[in-house]
Amino acid sequence: MKSVLAAWTLVLLAYGSGRAQVAVRDDSLFASSLGREKLFTVLLPAGYDSTHHYPVLYLLHGLDGNRSDWLTKSGIARYAARYELVIVFPDAENSWYVNAIGDTAARFEDFVMHDLRSYVNGHYGIDTSRQAIAGLSMGGYGAVVLALRFPGTFRFVGSLSGALSVPADSRTRLRDGGNAPIAKSLNKVFGVTQGQFYDDHNVLKIFRRTPPDSLPYFYLVGGTSDYYGEFFRGQVAFADSLTAYGARFEHHEIQGDHSWAFWDKEVQTLLKRLVKVLAVSTH
Image (cartoon, rainbow, N blue to C red; front, side, top):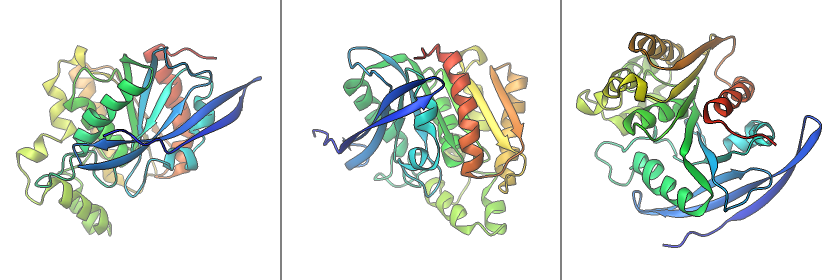
């Protein structure tokens, strides 16, 4: 089914001593994995030329968020204006970026990794050898788990306040800590019984399926005052595991909480690191 273009928005942004005009494009595709049309948003760099191949970053939202969050709640368009980088903002609902167990209408891993990426690669100028994925909270988990389940796809993976204790470790703590809605969403996606499905989506286990020199570069940031303590501890545990495994990564424990003020600040340094890892050109 042909995609329906929703809108174009040109945004004139200032950075340093120059100005750049980036384009925010709302686009859509029919996702066969979900059996329905899905909207997504693309941030195109200044001077975008469809015949040129650009590095791409898939930037994922958190629980109860959507594809517009990063653009409306952070300065991501301004921060990215100086880089020749395409940024894609999927809308994955409260899926945890997983093919939900027992629900064939909620195959969001397939949506992101197959439907969306195939469409983006076919309709935009993308350098498929320079792909990155990152996100916040649920999206931080999504970025890491998708990169690990599809080794060799992404060269850079970023997690800001990532829920890396999901699925097994956080369920009881979230419920007992008064976060029953989050626990309920986990039950819906991962099921109520631990088993192989849990293990196949536990980042602390599946990273060992890929040799350390074949893993992507991980950029991990956690706020030391994050009220989801299990998320922070999960990210620390993942960093410790990567150290022991000999993988390439950096982990930053920074004063901050689980908020857009924190993510808005930290995504700027994430972009600076991504630019070096992927050798992204600047204007």
